[in-house]
Image (cartoon, rainbow, N blue to C red; front, side, top):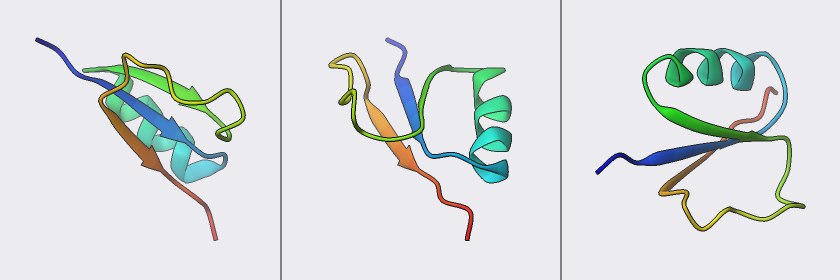
Amino acid sequence: MSAIAMIVGDGVLADFVYEELSAQFEVVRQINFEAGVPEAVNFVLVLHDA
């Protein structure tokens, strides 16, 4: 069983984390929650550059 992660956010930090995780895992990327969270997603990580 493999987990699907979702990264919500925009900016350098979100870009970096997405690039690193997507090399090894299935990752969904969105800049906000407008589209909702897909049912297949097991883990959501919200990142915000301050």
